[in-house]
Length: 202
Image: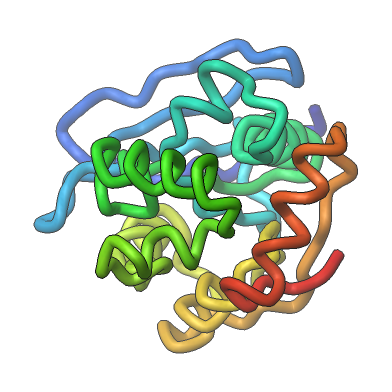
């Protein structure tokens, strides 16, 4: 790591200590963002880049923990950690199972998908829930605690994340798609989110 990368440090964002976590891609720094709407983890590179790569991540026990073959949450998080270590950047991580609707609703929605052969959005709407209730303001607030700049790169296919950043005054200079492991089930799921949730096609 060059001395110029070591010259600047991320700010400490709460009374809780920042910790260093070794990952398969390198070390990251982890802090707790304590916000009125709930705590988030802020994961950063060990140095501050001029233009960080940013990822908003919501918890997903199936994709991240069980490594479900029909979900891309786990592989996207792994790709984000890799990008943060190699390029410098920030991941904000919130406990938002089922896009913030909770694990119970998530289980009900998946059950409907399995029994009726419908997509994620249709399942949530059948449960009388918004299929994408998040506005990402909590992620933006957590991001602003560590990053005082304007320009960033976003790793996402969700246009609502991009809109949340731009509405907050950030300049998204690039959107990146990471090369992640693909399965037949995962590809089908991702393709279903394009018309259902308006996600950007890779």
